[in-house]
Image 1 (tube, helix red, strand yellow):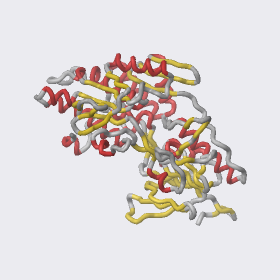
Image 2 (cartoon, one colour):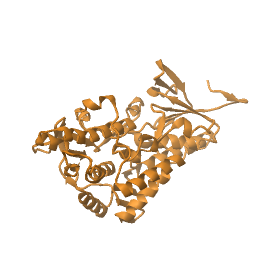
Image 3 (spheres, helix red, strand yellow):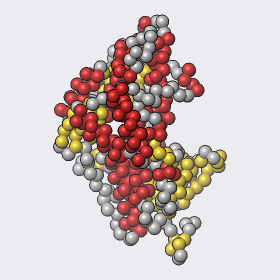
Amino acid sequence: MNPTHGDAVIPHVVIVGGGFAGLWATRALATAPVRITLVDRHNHHLFQPLLYQVATAGLSAPDIAAPLRHILRKQRNVEVRLAEATAIDAPARRITLAEAADANPSHLDYDYLLLASGATHAYFGHDEWAAHAPGLKTLDDALTLRRRLLLAFERAEASDDPAERAAWLSFAVVGGGPTGVELAGTLAEIARHTLKHEFRNIDPAQARVRLLEAGPRVLASFPESLSAKARRQLERLGVEVVTGTPVSAIDGRGYVLGDGMPVPARTVVWAAGVAASPLGALLDAPRDRAGRVQVGADLSVPNHPEVFVAGDLASVQQDGRPVPGVAPAAKQMGAHVAHAVRARLAGQPAPAFRYRDFGNLATIGRMAAVVDVRGVRLSGVLAWWFWLIAHVFFLIGFRNRLIVLINWTWAYWSYQRHARIILGREAADEP
């Protein structure tokens, strides 16, 4: 039963997912006459656009993440639950939770439900590749990838076999979107600058970094002119860009491009595809090929107007094109759901969602980036400064912004990356 305030029952809003969509919805309901339960498997909000910086040892995990309880400590109408949603009974307006602290599942009844659990990796029917080509969606992913990258240089240093050493110094990033471009560019900088003079038996600058894109160009969501400039900037950093040929096989020894021969590479990173969170399958609602829930104009689920879906889990069309799965879109969706809930509480129809596209940003390396913002197209140094300011501005918390600025200033002048620590008990057993 919902608690009451006087003679009125306080509506209960359950929000699953503490990412951009879920957190923005929660904050936008701060003054609404509702009580909110925010459910997430992790205890933190993650600034995912900078996750690759943790994977490549440029930033530490706390630099781009903050505890949800701390972020929402002053919002009195919110309760945070560390749990995973495992079932949804939409007709009964109830979800089932699995909580780490309790072996028995619990239940939450809701008046309004927002599903914003994000996306996971998609290997296009080759899930067996996941063991050999990790993706990058969570802090756990980033720390795993960092360990693999740093261990590759250590294994090369210890090897006496030239072929094996070359395989350890061969890195491949699959997928030419923003994440792939950022990872490949940063890897090249680490090999050629950060690790300079630190090894005795290998020259890290001889590492081979390849960016593999099945389509005709990298950064396909950008204008063709900026895509071409991004490719040139990557190549100047020492990245070998391969386009127009898909990866056909990946194992512990390397990969195969198309119908070609196997390429020895002990470190392959997956940045090629995403699939919606499995949570969408728990709803009796239509989904697209990527598993995203096809929602109505107000982001509610057909036949269940009290259930909303936002962020990477939502399939939204606007002007004949899909709304992109980027942080600004997720934030706008979250804020819109809060507006829709307020409208419903007031007995008014929920408005239609309208995405405001502020443009695309992608960094490539030190003083190299591309920007496409409302017709203004930049590349190189100016674009890099624009990218840096935008990302620091949107970090949550003054401490995060200050620490990131200090770390990036140090990295700019020294090429050093302060978080080059190999973590994990299983580090010695990495393939």
